[in-house]
Length: 553
Image (cartoon, rainbow, N blue to C red):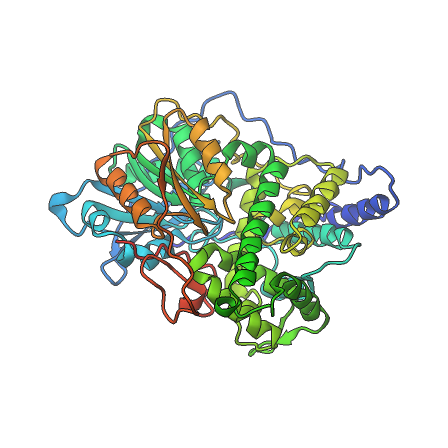
């Protein structure tokens, strides 16, 4: 069946942009504003009558090259009406390499929100440890609203390009108003282009989809590896269906309570973690100028100047685009996730940027491939998170985050809606209802043991989140990776072995186990990815947000 495509639903303007601009004027004069009070964004009450269980989809597998099989799964668009309209999910699997050792199906869920689970499996299967490939059919799918599963659209490519080209690495003192107005315009574009889908992409419905897919695959319980946002999806699944968990690995875990109920606190921790990673990199540059090559003895000062210089005089890219200070910050935000092994490469790329050399991978503006990821990234989090509607509170929080995370924070706080911790300007003004938002507890009482992994220097999902999740879950074990970078599996042989033993044999490492085998910075820019690392941007050129685990088998 062809994936259901939503025709754009033209919605009345909701006075969204006008409300934002009015609020800006009032805020600028210090006058209290209630400009958004007319926006009814409360969750609609659900019927007290329990709906019948949704039908389990039928998967008709076809060969899709390389030993992979593909299928489509029809699931309810709205689980309040399980017999109503359907949405079609694209799924992929590769059968266990050794049928005699097969234990079931391993669900693999990438980060995001917004990354393709189909691509995640295809990009990483060959690098998985042999024990996983032998023991499991490896399975992935594109969640609703992403990739091949009715991808939602907000800004079109031209409008997104304008947004990131106009953004600054060092925004001025009056940046809040334009950021608020642009976020309102983004929200309206979401309504115009994907209005029929927006309410139904939240993580509760994603978890329900996974449970239907589990049944469609004939699995009594779920075996699952989720990284980053995939860890939050797994957390919600365990919380909703604790008895259906066989083995759940949550790598780069979220503090689910903060994410869902205290989003400003969640965002702030991410601002500080990202800036902390950047700060430690610049400290290394100062201590090892020969290996870093950037900064002439003052890399921190050189970085601040570079952002200003690129804002004032953007570099023309090979395809005629413009790379400015915002471009630099955007690329660093993702590439710093690679950990210490990439530090010499970052130093070399910063030096190239300083020389206005447009071959620097830090001077690649976001492309349409990025926008396919960024749009759903914003929308899902606006559905999942419960932001207060006060614009004054919004301004206080984003201003404080920009001040306290000065290296990368200002560009993100006052930039257009793109990634994670810069969603507040859009989410506070979010115009759609959110019936698919999960709003329960996160105990997963009665589940099998769950493995949580946290990396001490993680710039994307702060280590404290993993600690918090391991305490919120009733039956969880925390494994710590003492390292820089995002997530542990595939970057640490120690952590990878623990994950394999857990997924295959359900052997849970002792809580408090620490791995400390991060690959250290090489003496010069590596030409290829060292074993156990990814270096995704360097290895894959212009590919955008390619989720790779790496080879630590």
